[in-house]
Image 1 (cartoon, rainbow, N blue to C red):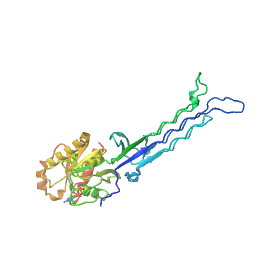
Image 2 (spheres, rainbow, N blue to C red; image 1 turned 30 degrees about the vertical axis):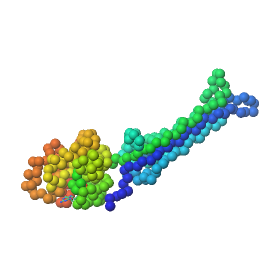
Image 3 (cartoon, rainbow, N blue to C red; image 1 turned 60 degrees about the vertical axis):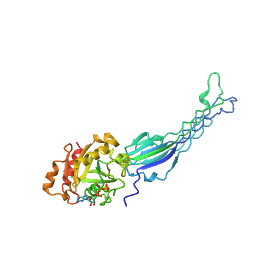
Image 4 (cartoon, rainbow, N blue to C red; image 1 turned 120 degrees about the horizontal axis):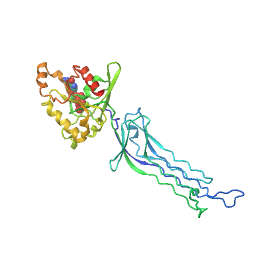
Length: 330
Ligand SMILES: Nc1nc2c(ncn2[C@@H]2O[C@H](COP(=O)(O)OP(=O)(O)OP(=O)(O)O)[C@@H](O)[C@H]2O)c(=O)[nH]1
Ligand SMILES: [Mg+2]
């Protein structure tokens, strides 16, 4: 089975703490019979905060958290003492985590750096103590501000993988096989469609200890944008990749037609995906002889660099790495 511990979507209720109430208090000292107001401010309610952590690769650790609740701030006290703030709750998330409002689907922010902290749900402000409300006409205010309530909201976190190259292809094109032959990743491989159900990442080492990261995602088919096959849920993983490697098997009836279908599905999902650099790998070239390869070259789309490759015979895999490396770094 594919790694079912890969969780790239979680939904939970996020509740920040209420602010503490401001205090109504008057100074009492031995020789000051009618002391002025000295009620302190209430403390801030605890925030719910997201923090980027490069050691995390999935949202699995948040899967069973349905409610995340921060403490309220404490009330202010006499002697202008401010109440303690409610404790913040910090959720560690992998880089590439996008926070959204679950009800509207609206994107709030994205965590892209290790240690980056962003407040997801802000704690309520503490109320001001009566000390703040003294005026010329009211020297002894008997009121203070209440604390601001906390916020309760449903949040969705989605993970986009941070890879340099994203593999795009129909099921069975040989994407997982390529990843396993040029990296240490061991995705499942099968001679049936939709072998890959969750994305896999692999680090591909390149000349002189250089490397890049490749993402193998489930195959997409015509109509994916309308939910066919596994749909396009996984396409968000390639939104962050700097280049796209299209993979079409050499035994396809028409390379050009398949390429156009894939392109069309990407465009329907997010037209910005078409701004990325593309490379075409015509896979399973071990099934072709040299003459057939020459013949097929005529019908390969000319708008992008292409290579015939074979993961089985290792044909052109080094050249493919060169091409990818150049595209990433140009
Ligand atoms: N002859 C040949 N067969 C290959 C090559 N690469 C992959 N295959 C075969 O093609 C089939 C599909 O390979 P996968 O790597 O699972 O394909 P995929 O694109 O990951 O498929 P999905 O995960 O279903 O989207 C398997 O039976 C592989 O053995 C190749 O270079 N040559
Ligand atoms: Mg696969």
